[in-house]
Image (cartoon, rainbow over all chains, first blue to last red; front, side, top):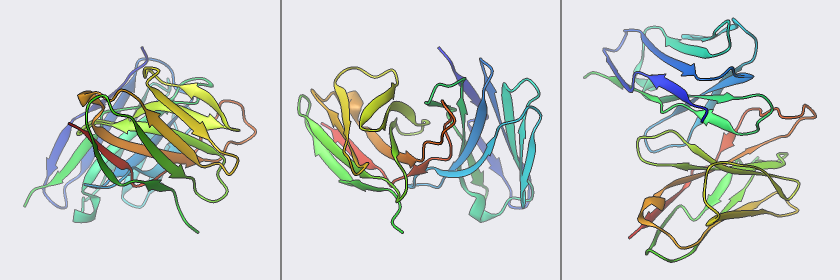
Length: 111
Length: 117
């Protein structure tokens, strides 16, 4: 079936270091969304990418959608404690209403 | 403006029992999707309701059923509970645009944590 692989599963960083998570789909996506889930919380929408090669920035967060619309990445510059949580990508295939979710990357700030 | 509300927040059931979870979507939203999230995993799509009908269904058995009411609120029913049904059940609301097949931003509730003993 259709899958979205997300790596790494965990990333431990020192505060101030950068963080990146990658998603790769087995099929071409019509669009991809990114969500953040804080510990004990629910997913919160960050952004949606629709166009091939699209790059969007939100302050320290940079989102990219690959040219083939099969992969995407989220990069956080100079992480802060408020960035802690699990970041999920969720892709839509064709006109299929369901989103296919990656397993998430957990951002952990080293003490 | 209330966001997505779900009830109950926590519940404990035993194997074989039935459970009903409820969701009220964000004001202005007409579409409700249900997800199951096991610990440490991403959400898994159960089904989506629009115009009081199940519009799309994920890979879940018939023990999982739902309903959407005229006021857009929704219920998720799970029959014959199994230990493996223990999870966080998330309701997400959205607005269905005129673009066929388009899924926009989802707004999630806090979830209902189900424990099956």
